[in-house]
Structures are given as C-alpha cells and as structure tokens.
Length: 51
Length: 382
Image (cartoon, rainbow over the protein chains, first blue to last red):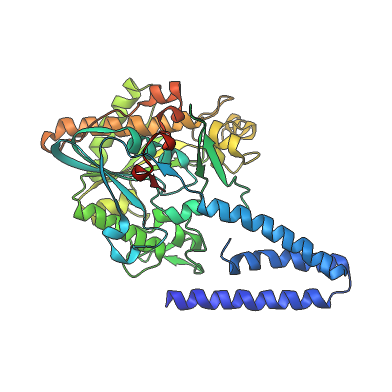
C-alpha cells in the first residue's frame, strides 16, 4: 500500500512538471519564463531521485 | 530563441544542484575497524525486510577475550547531531575490549545521513582535520531522506500507542521506536534495532544525541526508570572526575516513540540517551556553515544566552566538536565502569578509548584512522 501511494505521488509530480513546462511554453514575458523554469527544478530533481 | 536561453539557464541550475545533491547522498565514509572488531553485521541480519535497503546499517561487533555483558551504542539516530556519530566512530576504530561485547551502529538512520534540512542552508558535508589530511562526513538531517520514504501523512500516529505526533516525525528515528515490522522504512529500522537488542541480549543501549541550547533537555543523560540509578551514579562521577557537568532526566512516560522510553519498555535493555550542546541547531543562529558546526561559536546564540533564553551556558568559546565528542566518550566509559563494578558477570571492560580531557586536548581527528594505512579489504564504508 505504501509503495502504491509513493508511486502515485511520483505520477502527480510528473503531471505537475508537465503543466509547468506547458505554462513555460505559453509565456510571452521572459520574467515569467524564468519563474516557471525555477519552479520546475525541484520537480525534476525529485523525479530523477536527486532531492 | 529566448525560450531556449531560459531553458538552458534552468538546465544549468538543475545540473549544478543535482551534482551537489548526488555527491551529498553518495559520499563514502571509510571506517578502519579497530582491534576489537570481530565482524561487521548489518541490521538486515536481524530483520530480513531491511536487507539491501539504504537503512541496512553496519553493526560493528566488538568482542572481548572474556565473556561478559553486551552494550549497544547508537550513533546517527539524528545524523545532523554529528558528535554522536563521531563518538561511535572513535569506539569502532580505537576500542580494545577486555571483557564483554560492544555493538556499534554509526549510522542508525543511514537514510537521514544522505539529505540535509530543506530550507536550512546546511552544508552538504564537513571535514574533521587529522594528521593525515582530514576525513569528510556527510552532514545529514534529523529525518530520513524523503527519497527513501515519501509522502508524509497529515498527522503521524505512533505505533503502537497511536499518540498523535508531528507529521514529519514519521521519518524521525527517535519518534518511531519500538518500530513496526510492516511499517514505513523508519519504523522498520526501529523494529530491526529492537530485534538486534532482543536477539543479542543487550544489557545497556546508549543513544548519542546533541541538542540546541534553547531546548531544556540538554547536557544530560535521559534514563529509562530501570537505568535511573546507573545514570545518576554516572552523572555524579562525571561531574567530579571528568571535568564537565552532566545532569539526569527521567524518561517521560507520556511522550512516545523515543529510544529511552520505548527500548526500555519493549526490550530487556536499560536505555539511556545522551545530549550534548550543539549551537548549530539553535533557531537564533547566524550563518549555518561548517565553521559553526565544528566550532559551535555563534554571536547570535551568545546574545540569546545573555537574554536568558537558553538552557545551557555559552560564551565566545562556543561548544567545539571536540568538547561534544569528548562528553559522549567519557559518559559511556563512566557508565560502563559503574555497570561493570556492579555486575561483574555482565561486565564490559574497554580500553583505548579517549576520555573527555584527551579528546579536547588532541582533537577528534587524532583518533580517526587513515583509511590509506590499512589493507582496503579491511575497510568498511558507512
């Protein structure tokens, strides 16, 4: 059961990461682009099991 | 083109951070087993489901020539309190046993040694200077690494008491005793430690810790009721013979999950917990760097002391790591001497371990062995 919950959280993380990338691609201003890039980093590091 | 530049900046930041985190998680810490180490087991030998996991911690088994009692020393229950791991390291590399056995765990929560506190700006590692150049250790955190146990619940219900504790403490080794065989990684680690104690018929278990000076349980031995007399005698002898003062606290019955309460209740061992002062943990500290960790000097904590906000004294000399390590080694030696005097058939007689004054004079690094000086086959890694 614990493993299933953990896997679901990784799926959620990947889903949110995709949403962040989608929003990044839609932005017009470079400040907002950079903001999305920075927000994305912890999600990527978790998916890669680095942090 | 602009998006490519933004993506490149993000990738560069992620790679830089990722390399740092990977290094922090996988830094190997060598141990040169001392003359009394007869073998190195792991927690998985006592509880098979832990085998091969990150918390399948090494257990250094030190045996004397004569049979006697058995003592378990736990370092790294909270890895961000490094004096405990270093004191256990000194025992592993230097102790000579005349009678009885010492079981040593240097990384009780090995997962917790591989992460640092989110938002805490902790250094990834620290180095103890030695005559041969220095030995680097992982910094660690109070809790298991979320990479190994995730997510946390809204509220942590301690097993078996069902007491409600802070959500994050479900990853705190010293809130999960006596453990649960089918629980999460931290609970299973506690269960394995209790199994080790039961199967090896441990007489005394001593858990090494450090505390912030704003925490009232500091510079003390926290004792289960079956260890109250032993702790009180040790406190008196230490305060009169060793050059520092240490108090005694009774293990509260209402606060669950802690080693001094649960190990004493769930096993036959007397459970003690040692607390040394660590200004690095104080909320009022300044820069949280390696210097603060090793010197224990911080002007903001000193200022808090002047305002009467602390439960331990501090001045410009701080609380250096050698003082904190020496307190632990001397306290263990005094406990063993008193225990052995009272229980000759279950005695644990140890030599070769420096006391407080010697650690302060020569430094912790003087008692760490150069891993390059021995056959690589003899080395263990934490």
